[in-house]
Length: 486
Image (cartoon, rainbow, N blue to C red; front, top):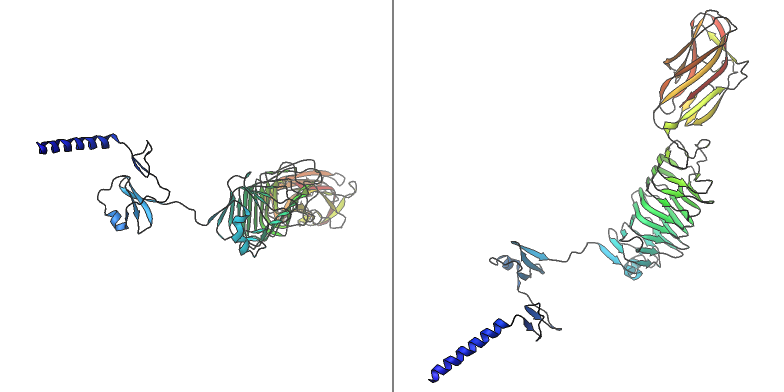
């Protein structure tokens, strides 16, 4: 009987515990009130959870691991979990060579590296500017990368001093730069250094400054506003300016070019130039191998958008022959619009006498010395001597020629003369031939000449004549002569 009672009590206890464990849906360790959403709630302020630890060989030897299985790999010092038939490493992704800058104090190591007089950045390192950073010293880029994520919120400030200095390049993007009473750039690089500056704003500075000496300077989508003086570019191999905007709130000269450039291209953007401000200054006659200024809109109240070349430009134009210019607000300048005209400037009723010997072709330059011609409306054209038009462009171009002569044969009634355009003194353009017959020595014949000619740089054209029928020595009188090409 006693034994039966013991068995009954045991069965009741088992039933109780079975009911208790099935009724409890959460387990708490360190807490008596586990969170209702958790199966296991571990609570401690002094200890953590330690997962199984094993080597890589032991981890990969686990048979049929379940999805979500978590272990710590002691070989790689990393957590792994099993997912979709493969072990996946749990590892935080940190960008190499990256530094977040939230105050100037975050640049203390760079200030030390710069001897306390400048922030010497680490080469090939990305410096991410977060917020407004007020600089106590200038920055030397040292081929590093400065970047912001929001141009209007990520700002570098250098009051009363220079913001960027030194002879190295780098990259600056997505930032607002401001140097009240100071200068943004004082950079003198070398041909082996490049500077990239884009997607930024330069505002309210004493001067944008000076950039020179680099192999490549590329400035794109940058807005300038409220600056007292602009920027000077000097001796840069390749200078590329794309979609740069200068607001009318700027004063002084916006962009000055000096020295030598292999390529200088400024495309797109705008320059609002008011008052005494100047948009572009090329008065120092920079030497440019290939210059392009296209698509930039010039507007404003200023009477001088361009401070022109003082050597090598033409009346009413701003640049020399190395440039192609096509911008709203300033004159069009390119080889395609080269043009010129010359005309005989003597007394029209007297003319000049040209001696004719047998059937030899002759240049109507006036072999008596009385023929002088005047050049007008020249653009990329010169007239270095009488009866000559010389092309001065950079590229070979086809021109339309129009010329006219008023001539009288002074003897040799019945003689025939041909008049034509000759290129470089040797090549007769036969399609320009026009004919005159001496009917009597009182008649004046008016001859027109037209045609086309392809001229390379420094090629020239002249009006020539030749007696076709007749012989001996005689003369003709030329009362008017003019040539125009376009």
